[in-house]
Amino acid sequence: MADDPAPELRPATPEEWPAFLEAMVGAFGETPTGPYLDTPPPVAEMDRSLGLWDGDQVVATAGIYSRTLTVPGGTVPCAGITWVTVAPTHRRRGVLTSIMRRQLTEVHEQDHEPVAALWASESSIYGRFGYAPATLRGGLTGRSERLRLRPDIDLGSGRVDGVPLDTYKPAAAAVYDTVRRSVPGNLARDERWWNRRLQDEPDDRDGATARRFLLHTEPDGTVTGYAAYRLKGAWTDAGEPDGTLIVEEVRTLSTQAYASLWKVLLSVDLVRTLKVYTASVDDPLKQMLTDPRALNLRPTDALWVRLVDVGAALSARRYPAPIDMVFEVRDPFCPWNDGRWHVWGHPAGAFCDRTDRDPDIVLGIEALSAAYLGGVSLATLQAAGRVTEVSPGAVTLASTAFFWPVTPWCPEEF
Image 1 (tube, rainbow, N blue to C red):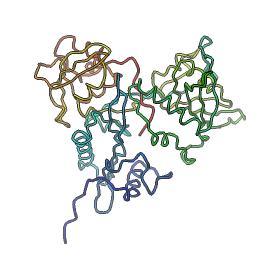
Image 2: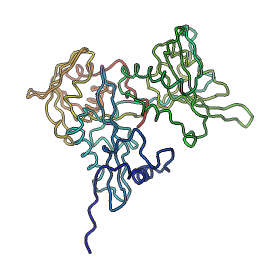
Image 3: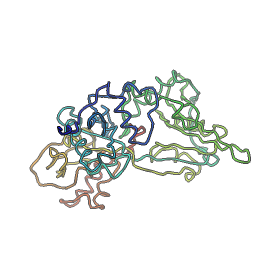
Image 4: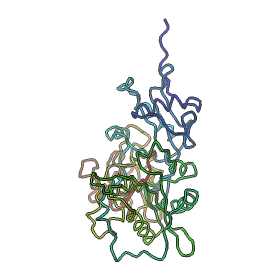
């Protein structure tokens, strides 16, 4: 009897999507739902997918979305890693390592995206492949009776209106495309990604209402802000309202628009609890309240980042303080990054290339990736034993240069 063929790791075809989807969703303990059960969704890039076929079974999955990521002072093409699963029957065989290695090698050699990023379902998995949490999500919660805006907040002269989806979508997209360019960790959204963002299947609402929409408009008709939210009704045993307001997104072009939208959101009737799952840990709402303690934060890791091409990635961002030093980067998983890199930069530009100069700092690719968006301090990483200072004072200088005044934040999972 002939030996069984070896498992094959290759891209899945659109025709293989149902089997690929079943294996992927099943690994997360979920049942496939929604409109894309038989054909891939519009955001899917099947030529960038990977499936491990063992006979006629799909036993591992992975994929990449082609995204654009905001970094300090600019944007870069980003490989959005997604769909990563391995069946329990094929664990501890090096399957995930093979997938990660192939993805990163192909991104480096074929697609030339200097950065990869992902959301980690389990936080202990991806560090060994060079990924590190570079943003946090706030997990904001509060009791509505304590959430009051300060009386000195300027609401401006604009107005807030509830609007239907077809009015909301183009206006929100225009606002988002402006504001996302100034917040490291934000991702560009084209028509496909807005459609995915606004998809609203009843099975996915978890007992809440359909999504509702607000727009903030200036007296001249210019839309300067938007909000999307849901209401989950509930009542106490005494018959008192105990609803939850679930705010999905609030983005604006001005402080007045932001305050005005929140004034309306905090006035929704029958609500006792506010939840904002994906807000920034540095959301300005906390600074607008009469009682800052009324808004509770439960921060957790959000977007994980991995530099695929050190030179291109460090050249793409800007540095608020001048930097001119050599980093010795340790990257055994992607050996093309291993070695010494001269980083020269300031607020208006930057350049990073190979050098044979002595290093000022020695660090692993995981630490460098964590610090890349400006939210994780190199000094903190040094204190954790993950950065070695060679030239006295180098870590202080590098920490100052890598910092960014806008807190990194990624408002969407993928």
